[in-house]
Amino acid sequence: MNSSHVKSSNKNQVAIPNFKIEQSQKIDITANAGTFLFAELTKRLDIIDSFAKLQIFERKRIGEAVHIFALVLNQFTGGDAITDTKNIKRDDAFRTIFGDIHIPAPHTSGDFLERFTKEKIDTLRAILWKMQEKSLKKLSKRLQRKIIISLDSSIYEVYGNCKENSSQSYKNLFGFYPLLLHIQHTGELLDIVFRAGAEFTATGADTMLEQNIVRLKPYFDEIILLADSGFFDKKIIQLCEREDINIKFIITSELNQPIRRKLTSADTAWREPINSENDAEVPAGQRNSNTMNHRLLALKTALKKHGKALKIRGELEVAEFQHTVSAWGKQYRFVFKRQRIKEQNLTDQANFFENTEEFFYHGYVTNIHHDDATLESIIQLIDSRGHQENFIKDFKRGLGTVHIPTKHFFGNYTYFLISMLSWNLKCWLMDIIEPGLHVRWKRFRYLVVKVGAQIIKTGSYVVIRFGKGFGRVDDFRTWFSRLQAFNFA
Image 1 (cartoon, rainbow, N blue to C red):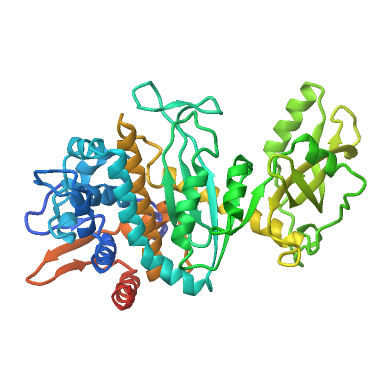
Image 2 (image 1 turned 180 degrees about the vertical axis):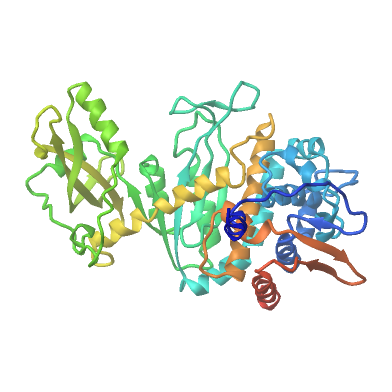
């Protein structure tokens, strides 16, 4: 056998070395070195002392700021539950980044949350709102005093009956049903209202909106509210129209009988939308991948087995009309889109679809007049609300809020408000170090947080020393310099 051939082939093999475990007694290393950027942001925002106003403890062995900060750090580093704080508690190098912070034991953090009452919840919310003022000032200039906010709710399922105020929701899931209010442009959370699972979608939404719109009014001249059909509610509409509030809204419409009669009336003029995506040209040279849609094939097989037809939606049409909802007592603009339902008889050999007289309808009610926004622009604006679904999903999974931590209602409420702080701190940090880059928590941790480095404490500095093979040192230098140069006033 040719020896050169053997040598060449060996290079293509994977050679696993032998391993040995040792622990350094001199060098501190952490896998979360990127959190020094978060530490710098916290220091420059000067937010730690404000938590002392909570006055949860009379004897302060561990202050309120430490408890809240420890829970935020746990979420930044990927902890899904309070018990995960034990991992950062054991990481001396990581704690050095934050001035040798004392991380409370998990049961101590749980006890801290359970001390909260409704009054303390309101105090914490006021503190968080105060922190957000600087961000709102900056955002006001960037958006030319125009802002879009998006209101939604989401069910958090729990198991067992040990969680206070957990109850059966409209989806027959047992748990909680919080309201979440986002800024559409940045994903920042303006507010969270924690509620029992049995609450109606719009319960408490009018109060939440009123409080937050009052907050936004000094910074924004135009506010547009986006919401789904759960908020097709008289209280919401009246609030938006109130003289001292006076904001625009686009809310997904219900499909009740009066509205259905309007949709099928001969007076309603349906047409193709201008600049429809259906009319977009296929890019030249685009290749058909010829891949099989196994999901569609399985659906066709199942429908054929039961003698049913395959239904798809046809071309998009749009229309608008004026309609008075009897309970509201005022006429509003309704914008709707529809698609004809097409059927394919899977038992026949013919492979074509037949039109039916059945339509899929979806529409919105708004107080934005036609002179201010076209029908297409209204639809495009409300369709962009899909971002909030991604925000809520990331808030659940990325921050681990899907795990309800305590058995006490106000303790869980507090945890959600602290999670709102974590969420916004991440938004603010990314807006400074990489403006325009919107990443979810998993990607954020990969890019910024989960970075291995030596942590060396000197007389006046804590040195973050990356390894010689680490290729993103320049990124961290740039990000750190942007943080130091940013004007927080």
